[in-house]
Length: 201
Image (cartoon, rainbow, N blue to C red; front, side, top):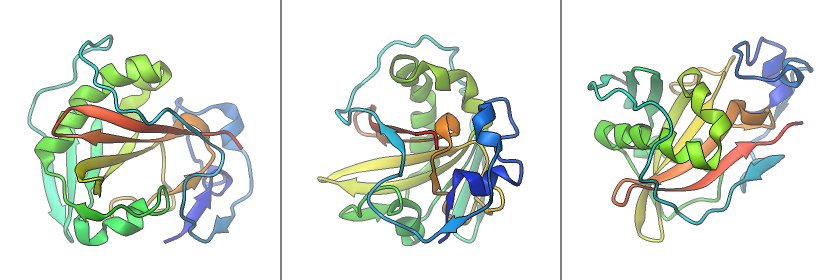
């Protein structure tokens, strides 16, 4: 697994979308070996789970998503959503670079992922409102983790992953600002926790 700094991606037109700031469009490509234990230069929000019951953003589409499976990975697409569900056998590589290892992994279903996506705008409207209008510009990787007996969905959001083939390889980037954020979701309670927005270099 290759761990990239934000500048490694900036040189190949990282964050070409309007969701990225001007400071994120410069730099020299570098690569670092994978590291565990969290993201460098990150802004980690309080990890106390919260449940949001109201929404200040337009309701997401309720149409069923399109799913395709390739090599055990399930691509899931719907209005404003394009992501991949990582199978449990591959999950550790997609998670440990962000956090320390959980007790085990599992594979979320498309229904559980869509429940996360439907609830996310309302949660972010209170926790990080600047992300809400940009949600349709992010790709996603969904990883099932078990922590303290709870089955959680870890969602990794990124504005661009080039040159990484993001549907089959982990995307772990240092800095880059709000082009990159991560969050956990408990399908059994509807609670979000551990919102982390990358810091700027």
